[in-house]
Image 1 (cartoon, rainbow, N blue to C red):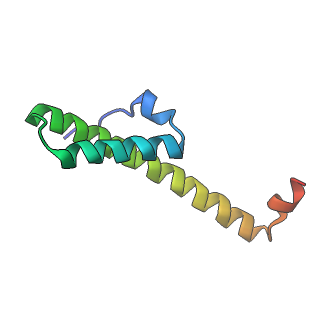
Image 2 (cartoon, helix red, strand yellow):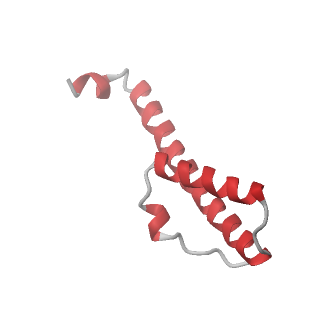
Length: 79
């Protein structure tokens, strides 16, 4: 299956925005009542939102690791 291109709308979301939209998508899927086509579209959007959240978290992990490796110099130099 070919990999789809990232959705620019989703790529522009902050972590909090992506997470909130993901919660809404999950709620709609759990509520049921959507057609198969609607459910598939929701699932695909949810997957894209989850990947966006993971990208934010991975970036945060790297920043924390870099700050810890620098002895916290980055955090104190901003003061």
